[in-house]
Amino acid sequence: MELLNIIAIIITLAAVFSYVNHRYLKLPTTIGVMVIALFISLILILVDKLGWGQFDQNARMLLENIDFSDTLLHGMLSFLLFAGALHVNINDLAKQKWIIISLASLGVIFSTFLIGVFTWLILGVLNIDIRLIYCLLFGALISPTDPIAVLGLLKTAGIPKSLETKITGEALFNDGIGVVIFLVLLDIARGGHDISGSHILLLFATETVGGVIYGLAIGALAYWMLKSVDNYQVEVLLTLALVIGGYTLAMALHLSGPIAIVIAGLLIGNHGRVLAMSENTREHLDAFWELVDEILNVVLFLLIGLEVLVLTLTLNYLLAALMIIPLVLLVRFIVVYIPVTLLKRLREFSPNAVKIMTWGALRGGISVALALSLPAGPERSVILTITYIVVVFSILVQGLTISRFATKSSEQKAGSPI
Image (tube, rainbow, N blue to C red; front, side, top):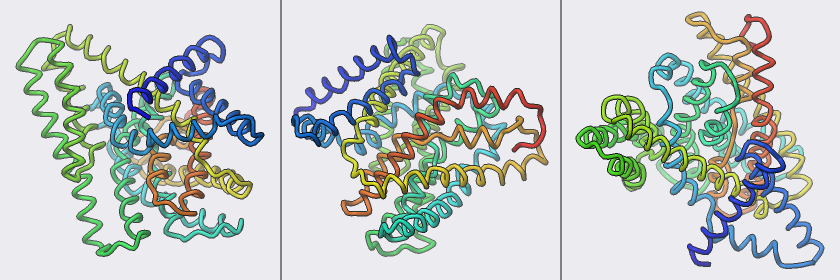
């Protein structure tokens, strides 16, 4: 199928589903589009099972041509991360730096191990044969909170500003360590060599530290260029080149593209916005990136809804996913509770901070994309199905209730962070 035809189908579906949601469902746009796509996908599966048509196979062919994993990780992700980082106040992040650093690093490592081990035990009870290393891979891909889902759904959640900053900051930065862990474990699963402590440290430094330095460099270059002109068309084009060119070069250099783009986005969104842009440029730049953000978010959630067509749905897999959902939430509670309890001696936290940060830690398309990147085999089917169900629960249940959950929590008196 030609690329133009694929784009035409996806954009048309996104537009129609957005219209239907706005007129009838009245859910947040991204969630509404995903719900409609998921519902139609399930209908197609049912129609195919009844032998009434070939719609299911045609939809599967469309998804195979799109390649969700490559489309998100090497296409849409850079735009969405930059658009999100562009509006994050760097001073607010600095105030929450210790909790963000602890959750985005040690929290992800601890969560990967706990979720991986207990997932392996749960699957063993259900007689699903899978190696521990693949369960640890599942822990690595499901532990980081998804910046796209978080930024998209917390905009109107109504949680306290300090908590929003913690959750957003963690989501923007925890992908680096999560991807490094995932890559190391994937190398082990494939029988890779030279998996030593020095190899892991080198990979971490290259991906994360290198990504930060590289992001500062390309951000500074873009800042200098923006400051030297006063033409909003040129300046918007420069930011577009920063995202596309910067991300592509980062991947070619084996640096963390997501971290680099986040750093560059924070630099342009803070210092660049104040010191290098006129008011006219700021208005056009914000309008452009907000539109890009909204369109790509809708397309992403549409694809998430359609991905159910490629799953292997069995009763055992469904039972495993239903048992693992509370496990993921429990582990999240633990990894948030520990640093909050330690740091509350140094600073105050909002009432029920741990509960809100646990429930507001959404998983999204990045987890699904990483699961799809696993090598073909029975383990991939298990992990992909469980990951998808956890992500759908996170977006639909947590995403739709976080606002009411936060409002109810804010009505309680300040006290223990739990």
